[in-house]
Image 1 (spheres, helix red, strand yellow):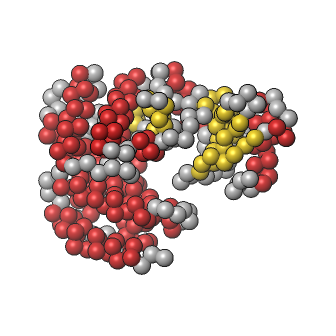
Image 2 (cartoon, rainbow, N blue to C red; image 1 turned 180 degrees about the vertical axis):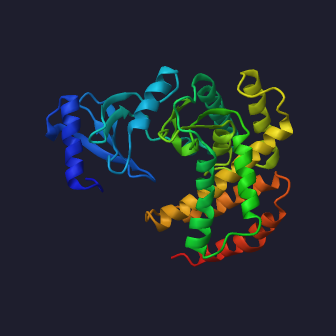
Image 3 (cartoon, one colour; image 1 turned 30 degrees about the vertical axis):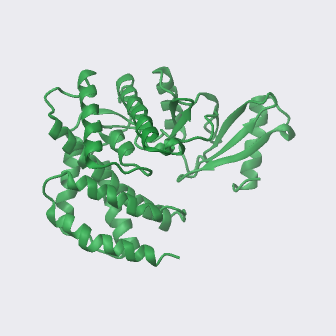
Length: 338
Protein backbone atom coordinates (compact mmCIF):
# COMPACT_ATOMS: atom_id res chain seq x y z
CA UNK A 1 0.00 0.00 0.00
CA UNK A 2 2.65 2.55 1.01
CA UNK A 3 6.10 2.85 2.49
CA UNK A 4 4.95 5.85 4.55
CA UNK A 5 3.61 5.51 8.10
CA UNK A 6 0.07 4.07 7.86
CA UNK A 7 -1.44 6.87 9.93
CA UNK A 8 -0.09 9.51 7.55
CA UNK A 9 -1.18 7.56 4.49
CA UNK A 10 -4.66 7.22 5.99
CA UNK A 11 -4.73 10.96 6.67
CA UNK A 12 -3.78 11.64 3.05
CA UNK A 13 -6.54 9.30 1.87
CA UNK A 14 -9.09 11.11 4.05
CA UNK A 15 -7.84 14.50 2.86
CA UNK A 16 -8.10 13.44 -0.78
CA UNK A 17 -11.63 12.17 -0.22
CA UNK A 18 -12.74 15.45 1.31
CA UNK A 19 -11.09 17.61 -1.37
CA UNK A 20 -12.51 15.61 -4.24
CA UNK A 21 -15.97 14.80 -2.85
CA UNK A 22 -15.37 11.05 -2.63
CA UNK A 23 -16.10 8.46 0.04
CA UNK A 24 -12.80 7.35 1.60
CA UNK A 25 -13.24 3.79 0.37
CA UNK A 26 -13.43 5.08 -3.21
CA UNK A 27 -10.06 6.85 -3.03
CA UNK A 28 -7.60 4.97 -5.22
CA UNK A 29 -4.10 6.13 -4.20
CA UNK A 30 -0.93 4.55 -5.57
CA UNK A 31 2.63 5.46 -4.67
CA UNK A 32 4.18 7.16 -7.68
CA UNK A 33 7.59 8.31 -6.52
CA UNK A 34 9.84 9.47 -3.72
CA UNK A 35 12.96 11.56 -4.05
CA UNK A 36 16.08 12.63 -2.22
CA UNK A 37 13.96 14.67 0.18
CA UNK A 38 11.22 13.48 2.52
CA UNK A 39 8.47 14.13 -0.02
CA UNK A 40 6.37 11.31 -1.45
CA UNK A 41 4.07 11.44 -4.45
CA UNK A 42 0.88 9.43 -4.94
CA UNK A 43 -1.30 9.16 -8.01
CA UNK A 44 -4.99 9.65 -7.28
CA UNK A 45 -7.27 7.86 -9.74
CA UNK A 46 -10.61 9.64 -9.95
CA UNK A 47 -13.92 7.99 -10.93
CA UNK A 48 -14.05 9.85 -14.26
CA UNK A 49 -10.75 8.29 -15.32
CA UNK A 50 -8.65 11.39 -14.74
CA UNK A 51 -5.76 11.51 -12.29
CA UNK A 52 -4.13 13.94 -9.91
CA UNK A 53 -0.73 13.84 -8.27
CA UNK A 54 -0.80 14.17 -4.49
CA UNK A 55 2.29 15.43 -2.71
CA UNK A 56 2.91 14.32 0.85
CA UNK A 57 5.46 16.71 2.34
CA UNK A 58 5.56 16.32 6.15
CA UNK A 59 5.68 19.88 7.56
CA UNK A 60 8.24 18.89 10.19
CA UNK A 61 10.58 17.82 7.40
CA UNK A 62 9.59 19.88 4.35
CA UNK A 63 8.41 23.47 3.98
CA UNK A 64 5.98 23.52 1.04
CA UNK A 65 5.42 27.28 1.06
CA UNK A 66 8.20 28.04 -1.45
CA UNK A 67 6.87 25.38 -3.83
CA UNK A 68 3.36 26.82 -3.68
CA UNK A 69 4.47 30.43 -4.11
CA UNK A 70 6.79 29.63 -7.01
CA UNK A 71 4.21 27.41 -8.74
CA UNK A 72 1.73 30.26 -8.68
CA UNK A 73 4.24 32.87 -9.83
CA UNK A 74 5.63 30.78 -12.66
CA UNK A 75 2.19 29.70 -13.84
CA UNK A 76 1.18 33.37 -14.00
CA UNK A 77 4.30 33.96 -16.13
CA UNK A 78 3.14 31.32 -18.59
CA UNK A 79 5.69 28.69 -17.63
CA UNK A 80 4.82 24.98 -17.82
CA UNK A 81 4.38 23.98 -14.18
CA UNK A 82 1.75 21.73 -12.58
CA UNK A 83 -1.43 23.51 -11.55
CA UNK A 84 -2.32 23.49 -7.86
CA UNK A 85 -5.77 22.00 -7.26
CA UNK A 86 -5.67 21.92 -3.47
CA UNK A 87 -3.15 23.13 -0.91
CA UNK A 88 -3.04 22.34 2.81
CA UNK A 89 0.20 23.67 4.27
CA UNK A 90 -0.75 22.63 7.79
CA UNK A 91 -0.81 18.94 6.87
CA UNK A 92 1.70 19.17 4.03
CA UNK A 93 -0.74 17.72 1.49
CA UNK A 94 -1.05 19.17 -2.04
CA UNK A 95 -3.04 18.07 -5.10
CA UNK A 96 -1.35 18.85 -8.42
CA UNK A 97 -1.69 18.20 -12.11
CA UNK A 98 -0.50 14.73 -13.02
CA UNK A 99 2.32 15.25 -15.53
CA UNK A 100 2.75 11.55 -16.20
CA UNK A 101 5.67 9.19 -15.76
CA UNK A 102 8.05 10.29 -18.51
CA UNK A 103 10.98 12.39 -17.31
CA UNK A 104 13.31 13.76 -19.93
CA UNK A 105 16.00 11.13 -19.38
CA UNK A 106 13.62 8.48 -20.72
CA UNK A 107 13.72 10.23 -24.10
CA UNK A 108 17.51 10.50 -24.37
CA UNK A 109 17.74 7.35 -26.49
CA UNK A 110 19.88 8.38 -29.46
CA UNK A 111 22.16 11.18 -30.56
CA UNK A 112 19.61 13.08 -32.64
CA UNK A 113 16.90 12.78 -30.02
CA UNK A 114 19.28 13.73 -27.22
CA UNK A 115 20.47 16.86 -29.02
CA UNK A 116 16.93 17.92 -29.94
CA UNK A 117 15.61 17.49 -26.41
CA UNK A 118 18.51 19.46 -24.98
CA UNK A 119 17.71 22.29 -27.40
CA UNK A 120 14.13 22.30 -26.12
CA UNK A 121 15.32 22.28 -22.53
CA UNK A 122 17.64 25.23 -23.15
CA UNK A 123 14.74 27.13 -24.70
CA UNK A 124 12.86 26.53 -21.45
CA UNK A 125 15.77 27.98 -19.45
CA UNK A 126 15.59 31.11 -21.60
CA UNK A 127 11.84 31.33 -20.97
CA UNK A 128 12.33 30.90 -17.23
CA UNK A 129 14.96 33.64 -17.10
CA UNK A 130 13.16 36.00 -19.46
CA UNK A 131 9.59 35.75 -18.14
CA UNK A 132 10.24 35.75 -14.41
CA UNK A 133 11.92 38.06 -11.97
CA UNK A 134 14.32 36.77 -9.32
CA UNK A 135 12.98 39.35 -6.87
CA UNK A 136 11.68 37.66 -3.75
CA UNK A 137 13.70 34.48 -4.19
CA UNK A 138 16.53 33.65 -1.78
CA UNK A 139 19.89 34.90 -2.98
CA UNK A 140 22.51 32.50 -4.26
CA UNK A 141 25.09 34.46 -2.30
CA UNK A 142 28.68 33.82 -1.25
CA UNK A 143 27.62 32.06 1.94
CA UNK A 144 25.38 29.58 0.12
CA UNK A 145 27.97 28.94 -2.58
CA UNK A 146 30.58 28.29 0.10
CA UNK A 147 28.30 25.92 2.06
CA UNK A 148 27.66 23.94 -1.09
CA UNK A 149 31.33 23.69 -1.97
CA UNK A 150 32.20 22.64 1.56
CA UNK A 151 30.02 19.55 1.14
CA UNK A 152 32.84 18.08 -0.96
CA UNK A 153 35.61 18.02 1.69
CA UNK A 154 33.17 17.33 4.52
CA UNK A 155 31.16 14.43 3.09
CA UNK A 156 33.03 13.08 0.08
CA UNK A 157 36.61 13.42 1.31
CA UNK A 158 36.52 13.21 5.10
CA UNK A 159 33.36 11.20 5.81
CA UNK A 160 33.44 8.78 2.89
CA UNK A 161 37.06 8.53 1.72
CA UNK A 162 38.89 9.55 4.89
CA UNK A 163 40.99 12.08 2.99
CA UNK A 164 42.01 15.65 3.94
CA UNK A 165 41.25 18.69 1.81
CA UNK A 166 43.70 18.74 -1.11
CA UNK A 167 46.36 21.23 -2.17
CA UNK A 168 44.89 24.20 -3.94
CA UNK A 169 41.42 23.68 -2.48
CA UNK A 170 41.12 27.07 -0.78
CA UNK A 171 42.25 28.90 -3.93
CA UNK A 172 39.86 26.97 -6.16
CA UNK A 173 36.98 27.45 -3.71
CA UNK A 174 37.40 31.22 -3.65
CA UNK A 175 37.83 31.44 -7.43
CA UNK A 176 34.61 29.50 -8.08
CA UNK A 177 32.64 31.67 -5.66
CA UNK A 178 34.00 34.86 -7.22
CA UNK A 179 33.15 33.68 -10.73
CA UNK A 180 29.56 32.85 -9.75
CA UNK A 181 29.03 36.20 -8.04
CA UNK A 182 30.36 38.08 -11.09
CA UNK A 183 27.50 36.83 -13.28
CA UNK A 184 24.14 38.55 -13.90
CA UNK A 185 21.46 37.45 -11.45
CA UNK A 186 18.42 35.64 -12.86
CA UNK A 187 15.80 33.17 -11.70
CA UNK A 188 17.54 29.83 -11.10
CA UNK A 189 15.62 26.55 -10.83
CA UNK A 190 18.70 25.10 -9.09
CA UNK A 191 18.18 21.49 -10.18
CA UNK A 192 17.48 21.86 -13.87
CA UNK A 193 18.33 18.23 -14.59
CA UNK A 194 16.56 15.83 -16.94
CA UNK A 195 14.86 14.09 -14.01
CA UNK A 196 13.04 17.34 -13.16
CA UNK A 197 11.75 17.95 -16.69
CA UNK A 198 8.61 16.00 -17.55
CA UNK A 199 7.83 15.26 -21.19
CA UNK A 200 4.39 16.34 -22.35
CA UNK A 201 4.13 15.40 -26.02
CA UNK A 202 6.86 17.46 -27.66
CA UNK A 203 7.07 19.93 -24.77
CA UNK A 204 8.64 19.96 -21.33
CA UNK A 205 7.20 20.85 -17.93
CA UNK A 206 9.06 21.89 -14.78
CA UNK A 207 8.86 20.11 -11.44
CA UNK A 208 10.83 20.13 -8.17
CA UNK A 209 11.42 23.88 -8.24
CA UNK A 210 10.93 24.63 -4.54
CA UNK A 211 14.64 25.45 -4.08
CA UNK A 212 14.70 28.16 -6.76
CA UNK A 213 17.00 31.10 -6.05
CA UNK A 214 18.17 34.40 -7.50
CA UNK A 215 21.54 33.42 -8.88
CA UNK A 216 24.08 33.13 -11.69
CA UNK A 217 22.88 33.12 -15.28
CA UNK A 218 24.88 29.98 -16.18
CA UNK A 219 23.73 27.77 -13.31
CA UNK A 220 20.70 26.08 -14.87
CA UNK A 221 22.51 25.78 -18.19
CA UNK A 222 25.36 23.75 -16.68
CA UNK A 223 22.91 21.77 -14.53
CA UNK A 224 21.40 20.56 -17.79
CA UNK A 225 24.56 20.12 -19.88
CA UNK A 226 26.58 18.49 -17.11
CA UNK A 227 23.79 16.61 -15.39
CA UNK A 228 23.22 12.98 -14.42
CA UNK A 229 22.54 11.37 -17.76
CA UNK A 230 24.80 12.76 -20.50
CA UNK A 231 28.38 13.78 -21.04
CA UNK A 232 29.03 16.06 -24.01
CA UNK A 233 32.42 16.73 -25.53
CA UNK A 234 34.16 20.07 -25.15
CA UNK A 235 33.19 21.38 -28.58
CA UNK A 236 29.49 20.60 -28.19
CA UNK A 237 29.45 22.13 -24.70
CA UNK A 238 31.20 25.29 -25.93
CA UNK A 239 28.84 25.63 -28.91
CA UNK A 240 25.78 25.42 -26.70
CA UNK A 241 27.22 27.88 -24.18
CA UNK A 242 27.95 30.36 -26.98
CA UNK A 243 24.46 30.00 -28.44
CA UNK A 244 23.07 30.60 -24.98
CA UNK A 245 25.25 33.70 -24.56
CA UNK A 246 24.05 35.19 -27.83
CA UNK A 247 20.38 34.76 -26.99
CA UNK A 248 20.87 36.09 -23.47
CA UNK A 249 22.52 39.18 -24.96
CA UNK A 250 19.69 39.60 -27.51
CA UNK A 251 17.07 39.38 -24.77
CA UNK A 252 18.91 41.79 -22.48
CA UNK A 253 19.87 39.41 -19.68
CA UNK A 254 23.58 39.60 -20.38
CA UNK A 255 25.68 42.67 -21.26
CA UNK A 256 26.84 42.65 -24.87
CA UNK A 257 30.43 43.31 -23.79
CA UNK A 258 30.70 39.87 -22.16
CA UNK A 259 32.97 38.08 -24.63
CA UNK A 260 32.49 34.42 -25.64
CA UNK A 261 35.68 33.25 -23.92
CA UNK A 262 34.78 34.99 -20.67
CA UNK A 263 31.25 33.56 -20.66
CA UNK A 264 32.54 30.06 -21.41
CA UNK A 265 34.99 30.35 -18.51
CA UNK A 266 32.12 31.39 -16.23
CA UNK A 267 30.11 28.37 -17.37
CA UNK A 268 33.07 26.06 -16.76
CA UNK A 269 33.58 27.49 -13.27
CA UNK A 270 29.88 27.17 -12.48
CA UNK A 271 29.90 23.58 -13.70
CA UNK A 272 32.92 22.81 -11.52
CA UNK A 273 31.15 24.29 -8.49
CA UNK A 274 28.05 22.21 -9.14
CA UNK A 275 30.01 18.99 -9.70
CA UNK A 276 31.86 19.44 -6.42
CA UNK A 277 28.59 20.11 -4.64
CA UNK A 278 26.97 17.01 -6.16
CA UNK A 279 29.90 14.79 -5.17
CA UNK A 280 29.39 15.96 -1.59
CA UNK A 281 25.61 15.71 -1.62
CA UNK A 282 25.59 12.18 -3.03
CA UNK A 283 27.91 11.03 -0.26
CA UNK A 284 25.77 12.79 2.34
CA UNK A 285 22.60 11.18 0.99
CA UNK A 286 24.31 7.82 1.32
CA UNK A 287 25.95 8.24 4.72
CA UNK A 288 23.54 10.48 6.61
CA UNK A 289 20.19 9.80 4.96
CA UNK A 290 20.68 6.11 4.10
CA UNK A 291 19.65 6.67 0.47
CA UNK A 292 20.68 4.07 -2.08
CA UNK A 293 21.85 4.46 -5.66
CA UNK A 294 23.94 7.62 -5.39
CA UNK A 295 27.49 6.32 -5.03
CA UNK A 296 27.39 4.69 -8.45
CA UNK A 297 26.97 8.16 -9.98
CA UNK A 298 30.15 9.59 -8.46
CA UNK A 299 32.46 8.69 -11.38
CA UNK A 300 30.09 10.43 -13.79
CA UNK A 301 30.28 13.68 -11.85
CA UNK A 302 34.01 13.31 -11.41
CA UNK A 303 34.24 13.23 -15.20
CA UNK A 304 32.10 16.39 -15.33
CA UNK A 305 34.43 18.03 -12.82
CA UNK A 306 37.50 17.10 -14.84
CA UNK A 307 35.88 18.42 -18.03
CA UNK A 308 35.02 21.68 -16.29
CA UNK A 309 38.46 22.22 -14.78
CA UNK A 310 40.11 21.44 -18.13
CA UNK A 311 38.35 24.53 -19.45
CA UNK A 312 39.79 26.77 -16.73
CA UNK A 313 43.26 28.23 -16.51
CA UNK A 314 45.37 27.57 -13.42
CA UNK A 315 44.54 25.36 -10.42
CA UNK A 316 47.33 22.98 -11.42
CA UNK A 317 47.84 21.54 -7.93
CA UNK A 318 44.17 20.66 -7.55
CA UNK A 319 43.97 19.16 -11.04
CA UNK A 320 47.03 17.00 -10.37
CA UNK A 321 45.59 15.84 -7.03
CA UNK A 322 42.31 14.98 -8.72
CA UNK A 323 44.05 12.70 -11.23
CA UNK A 324 46.74 11.24 -8.99
CA UNK A 325 44.98 10.88 -5.64
CA UNK A 326 41.22 11.38 -5.78
CA UNK A 327 40.36 9.32 -8.85
CA UNK A 328 42.34 6.24 -7.64
CA UNK A 329 40.86 6.57 -4.13
CA UNK A 330 37.35 6.81 -5.55
CA UNK A 331 37.89 3.76 -7.76
CA UNK A 332 39.23 1.73 -4.85
CA UNK A 333 36.44 2.76 -2.48
CA UNK A 334 33.74 1.96 -5.01
CA UNK A 335 35.39 -1.40 -5.60
CA UNK A 336 35.04 -2.13 -1.89
CA UNK A 337 31.36 -1.19 -1.88
CA UNK A 338 29.06 -4.06 -0.88
